[in-house]
Image 1 (spheres, helix red, strand yellow):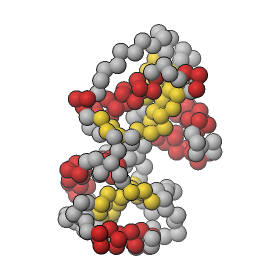
Image 2 (cartoon, rainbow, N blue to C red):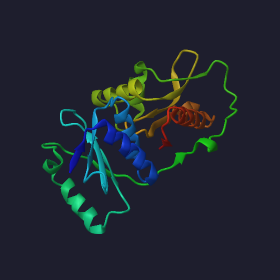
Image 3 (cartoon, rainbow, N blue to C red):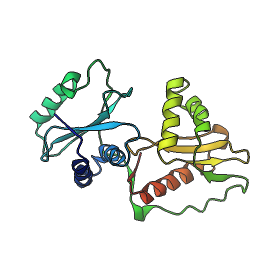
Length: 223
């Protein structure tokens, strides 16, 4: 397994992964963010270069992170996939020791195409407005997240807010009523609307606005 550190190779990989949409979307999103400043300090591992059959994105050794995404090329044989799976059960082979990993295989997910994004004409209360989330909103997001409610989740959400695009509906006091974030894999996540404000079209408005924002930055919108 090889860790890709060369910026030119990483840019080449980004272009090559586009040919394998939608299966490669999450790994592609991670590589895009690595090529654009790498705010979450991830790295890329391939089985070979340039004729790779598997791509793994993961946190760097010194980063306190968990979870990684894997893209397996259609050119991989069943034997090759089995061999890769065996490697993943031995973190030392991936250069990661004494770490508990959450393994997630990339599967096709929905994504917007630029010419299919509809323009929503939602009549909102004039007191409400569309805006980006602020780091001060991280506490609320953590409380409403099923895995949240602890300092680590709040820090994670605050980092997402600071590093990646987000959209929310704010009331006249600047309090979020509905929102969605983007993570380090360029995935639209944490979509949520407060119970008392549901069935008003806010979620659709937020999701569509965020998808358009991602496309304007060159990212595929996925979730």
